[in-house]
Amino acid sequence: MKMLINGEWRDSVSGKVFLVHNPATGDVVGEAPLGGEDDVRSAIEAAGEAFADWSARSSRDRGKVLFFAAEEVRRRNTDLAALLTAEQGKPIREAVDEINGFANILEYYHALSAGERGEFMNLGGYGRVTVERRPLGICGAIIPWNMPAIIMGWKIGPALTAGNTVVLKPARTAPLTCMKLAEILGDAGLPPGVLNVVTGPGETVGREIARNPGVRKVSFTGEVGTGRQVALDAAPALKRLTLELGGSDPMIVCDDADIPAAVEGVVRGRFYNCGQVCTAVKRLYVYESIADEFVRRLTARVEAIVVGNGMDRGVGMGPLNNRAGLERVVGQVDAARDRDEGEIVTGGQAPRGEAYERGHFFLPTLIAGVPHDSVLFAEEVFGPVLPIATVPGLDEALELANNSRYGLGASVWTHSADVIARATEELEAGIVWVNQHLRIPPEVPFGGTKASGIGRENGSRALEEYMEEKAVLIRL
Image (cartoon, rainbow, N blue to C red; front, top):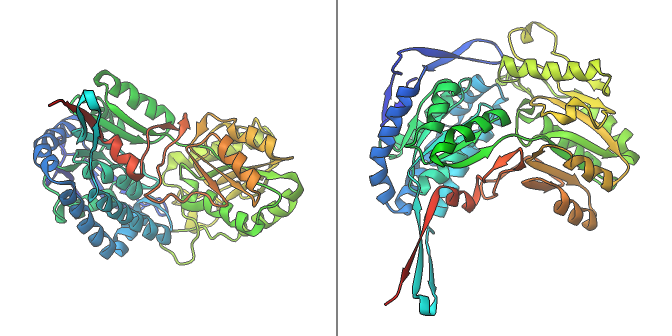
């Protein structure tokens, strides 16, 4: 697989490659060019040359390309999902859903493309005013390895629909599916140079995208420290920024909740994609009056999850994507164990057996009775570990839920209209779910508060993030 610049698949300037490994087996899945700063500059030059023609097209014509690409993605779903599982590790059914999700996003922005319009006002003595919306120019997209297809869609969907050109950097441990999706977009009619994909390290490829003055906007998804560096690198050119920087989502289960439904909500919300989701349930607060029953039911359900290679039938949770992520999760659990911060109800270690020896596996883990100042609550745990605390009621639950530097998502499980009204008002998060968690359709604006970032992806709002306004006042 080669990088895509100006519609051509080419090697990096260095001529070097890096290998992509299956996180379940350690086997080599493929290779990608080890790109560098010169490759990014070539991609930016190609994007600049392509911008005039692409931005001059009607939004409807641009949207048609996305629609045709979505059709082809759906047709090739099986192969794309297998590739995604091989490089990322998630169970094949989750990979199928993610590939379909990418197609959903393209179809959504195709639908929006038919209704693009500006504003008109008659202001009497001031004259007539039109407000035009125009694309920014070249946009950079830096995406992570946990949900590469979905997050690629979140970034390129609105950017391309708005008339921008894009330089995309996939994650080093999961670049292959993104490159295939870019190839499909080209086959669907996306002109050369409109979407360029440069693979390589974040410290060279990512930083050049963030620093290069030819890039007008950068959209980054990743951890807080890297997001701060992206903001610093982009600051001299006063670039537009969208930063989605992770979260530590609380889930509050009230005493009137549907317990079986809430248990399933925890299982999906925490252990989907091996817990490697920014909006995963990462802190669980359960009312004291139902805590024993809830934890008992949840434990039985979690212990039924089959851990293994995502391509194997019946597997409910695959490995973590990379060794560094596994080591961090192990370190966080060990730190909590050493400090006697709660009781490990189930899990807490890697599964045993020959089938797991070469992969980055960790058992789905529940830790009950976790003190409120535990490292498991203070840090984002990006893996299949769930700390649980009990609360006497809503006041303490909301206080603890908001006691975090993060503010990405949160959920409350209840049938009380009063509790719903208060929780949705007071929870400090960019998205609040009621009696559900994790799902984000493309119509819904997505982003966070506090350290979880700035800007929004998804929805019609995302188009505005990729456009600038020009007001024209006419007095005849």
